Amino acid sequence: MKKILSILLLIFLLTPSAFAFGGKKLDSAAFEGKGYAGTLPDLSKMYKSNEPAESTPQFETTKQFNSANEIKPVPRDNPAFVNIILKPGKTSEYVTDMNDVLSMFENILTSIENEEDVQKFSAKVYFLNKSIEYLENKYDGKPESQYISFKKVTEANTQCKSVMNLRTEAEKNKVYMAYSGNGAIYSENTINEQLGYLKTEIEQTIATIKDAEE
Image 1 (spheres, one colour):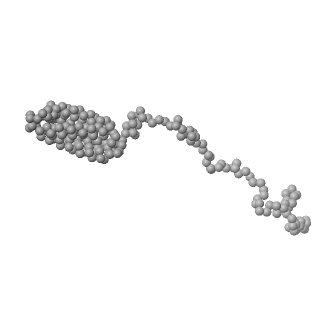
Image 2 (image 1 turned 45 degrees about the horizontal axis):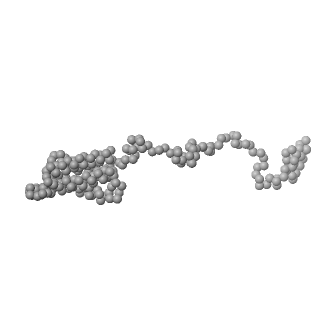
Image 3 (image 1 turned 60 degrees about the vertical axis):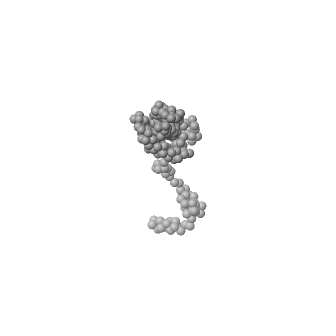
């Protein structure tokens, strides 16, 4: 028996052709360079992909997003928006300049109410005029020069200068008033009348400046 098994084993090793399953001979040349020729298992059922799934945008299309009908109007009727967003900051350079001018107008108003003499009145108007001249040069050609508050202070300054000149001339010519037909121009009644007009103008100017800063 052992001899028979040895003979069969020898025959098997010396056979030149390969064997195949089911009795068919496999040709090795047909699978050359093609790797594994068997059937692979479906691995996709054995694990879950780690790649994130494609997300769907939560907003509508760009065309709809950019549509004028989709844009909400600016809340100009909302006091919070108007006061905080639209108005300039309280520390802006223009507001600072207006605050300086405001104090000068208040000083002139006090001078009129207290009936100060010509010298004190003229000194306060002089400093106001120099400040307004500086601001006119500073804001020449700029948007600030078109502000209502800016125009108001320049107009009031012009009236202050006119009354200052009137009082100064009256002080110089009061000795000759009785002998001149023009004495009525420098009379006390005329000066007081002009000071009354100026007082009203200054009060309106102060209110305009304060309104612009609120």
